[in-house]
Image: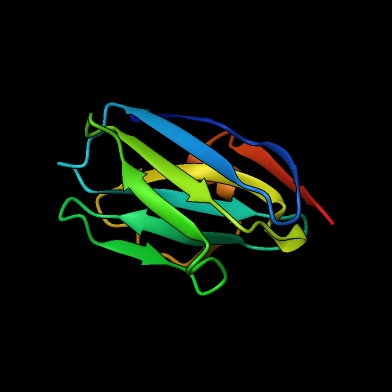
Length: 123
């Protein structure tokens, strides 16, 4: 069973930065992709970034140029550096791991990815 543990969420003012971390148990980049979804109240769960075993990164248009995904030294750790944060980035952020992370939207992040970590950006 794959278990994902996120950390690094919090509250910042607009323009600030946060760094999310995720460590997976039972999964490594050799098994597939890792990435991040987010879900704000009333919105769908959205894939915002992913990285493949071949180090190919994907970013949603909404975060392109502001967020950077990277790998830790261990193949089961992924980070999301979030810069120039905006109030519309406020959401619960979920680490994700699967053979292919290609589903851009899904109804519920928590049902698929677990607990997540809250990011709140104030104006």
